[in-house]
Image 1: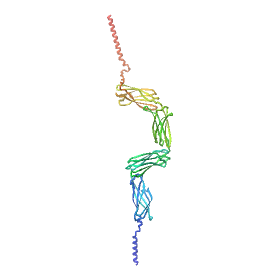
Image 2: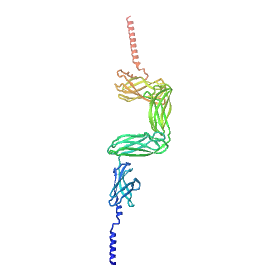
Image 3: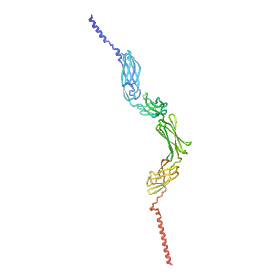
Image 4: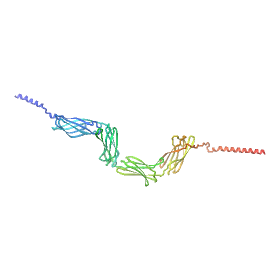
Length: 489
């Protein structure tokens, strides 16, 4: 009897060992990450894309509670996370979407981690590798920030470009920053064609001094109807507002006309907005001109009329908006009612072989002297400067006076106008102009006489000899007549 019991016990042990005691463990091992996808599969830098993770639970498993799904880089940097997305029943699956973006182009290695607990209380952790290629191109955003000063609008240029194969639409560009007043710093546009770019100029106003972040936000709709956002941030050095404006003006003579150019220079660190330049003569306003906006380290020149000037001084004022205040800068310009001005008068032509002598007067029609006056023949069609007097130095011509000059040039027969350059100094400024001297080709110019005598008396020698010969003949005839008369007596 005892011998039979032992084999039976051994048989019982063998049968018990064949029973599948690892059913729970085997069921838990059937929870797995079936698939991970990225949409779009090749996003652009900083473009939002979705990572979808599909988790399956086998039929012979127990329910699995998903506690957390995470997308990380290989260095452990979390890019997206979701907590408690739900429970997966037996034989079911769950797809968990996560939205994220990547800033660098090229192939990016990521991993998806799923943490959860089975119905029996066993903790599980699953991992799945993911590779995402961040492509170049796509809509891009660039931002350039000018000099920034507190309480002054700061010019910011935002350039958007479309690297997609089709046009994007619903463009919305705006600026955001805690230390900036960005009201009105927004632009909207309908479409941007493929391969095109567009620059928007926005003007936020810094409210505090220091280093502050300013972000450009570019929203648009893709050809597929997806709404996307691209951002770019710059750190802006906001300084205290510094005013440094210069206004200069001087009366100028240009081709015989009097002008008053006024130059406004901005040496400060903020734009001058709404610049208006005006000039007054005593109580009379001579003119006002707008110069628009002058950026830091910039300048503009405006021309003011001079027809109504009667005094000896002109007051010039530039008004402008700097920050939130209206300010002005002044200067005074001395003015001569009729400054010195040379003109050519009394011109005449005289031919000497193939060279013409041009004579005349350089007349000062103004009320101040002119200095360093020079006249010269200018080359032109039918006109060739020729020595000995291609250029003539006149020197000083006093007010309301004149100085004669003589020039020489070779002229073709049908040449009717000879250009003469006139250059002189008035009030320390050199004036250059060209005067066309008219020539009447229908009349005959006088010809210079050829004198062979050094003392100038050669022209009287021949008549004198003739006269002496005639007188001698008369005397001889008289003597002969007297002798014959006496012989006859």
